[in-house]
Image (cartoon, rainbow, N blue to C red):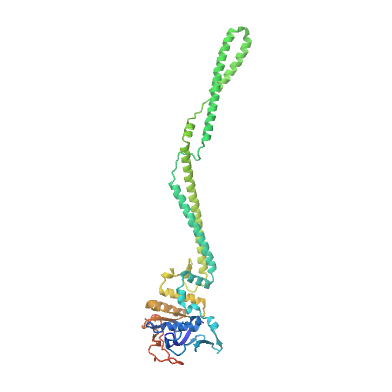
Amino acid sequence: MTIKINKLEIENVKRVKAVKLEPSSAGLTLVGGRNNQGKTSVLDAIAWALGGNKYRPSQANREGSMVAPYLQLTLSNGLVVERKGKNSDLRVIDPDGQKGGQQLLDSFVEELAIDLPKFMNATNKEKANILLRIIGVGEQLQTFEKQEQEVYSRRHTIGQIADQKAKFAKEQPYFTDAPKEPVSASELISQQQEILARNGQNQLKRQRVTQIQAEFEQQGREVVRLTAILNAAQEKYTQLQTDLGIAQKDALDLHDQSTTELEQNITQIDEINRKVRANLDKDKAETDASDYRVQYDQLSTQINEIRQQKAELLNNANLPLEGLSVDEGELIYNGQRWDNMSGSDQLKVSTAIVRKLKPDCGFILLDKLEQMDLQTLNEFGAWLEQEGLQAIATRVSTGDECSIIIEDGYVAGQEQAIATDAPPAAETKTWKAGEF
């Protein structure tokens, strides 16, 4: 059972002279009136009574009054909270008549419930951190957020490199007539020298043929002339004939190689190598771009997996309001971030989170609801009743939507006289959704 405010009596606090109020147990109790009549003073008095002296107004005594402030709140759990006397001493009496103090109140009164603007005015990340702390997943979600940011940064860098490589590859020319590897001038020259050496040997062999031919012919003439030495000459002739046959056969099988292509390659080696290097650069850039795209896709998959883990973490958490979540360190409600939420939704989110902080605290205080139209008030009030929550709020208005009207420190319609020991009771209008 949540604890709510059953009734309150206030005297001589700020602008309040004497007000007695019994707020609706569920839904919205609107304290209306013109400016500077004492509406906000009612909320400040409640905050002071329940929250302690840190909420005591800097000028707590009503100006011109010789009577000390008097506060009395009766709560739904039977506790009676009083502040009275010169020093506004606190007295808390429980249902059994035992005395308590501020520590007892702090055990169930949530600080943000009596100071909801403190939550609503916090940054988006501060609101989200409060929610994550409540549901106990803050550290885990922070780890996921950090992992996601790191992988996202790596993916962003990889993507940029891949784009640069692809752009570089696209801008590079490609020469289909160029070889796959750069040409070495020294190798071409070496090949040329080897061919020239073989050609030189061939020429020597040809010269040898001519020489042997001449000797053969001379020796033939010697055979004719020197018949006396025929046997010796014949032997030599036969040998030379054999050598001639071998030499002729070798000569017929010889083919000289052309060095024209090598000479052209040597002449054009710089241009050829320029084309080869350009082709190699283009091929490498295309390969690099493809590799980085693969890495980019892998990192994208990793980011999606982290986001899925975050979603599962929040889906399994005991969130205080259906449709409420956290994304990138900010509150999300029904798909909208805080600055895109309606005024009614902002109040719902704030109230639900504050209630989750201390579930026993069944009420909140709200100031300046004149910023909201009647439809927004209607939606918020209906939600409060549905949730069984109590809200006491102020509004610059004297319309029918107000539960009571404060005029010059009193409830409008009541006798405007300070009764220090028994202030007049206010006939409180119960505000209900759809009533206006």
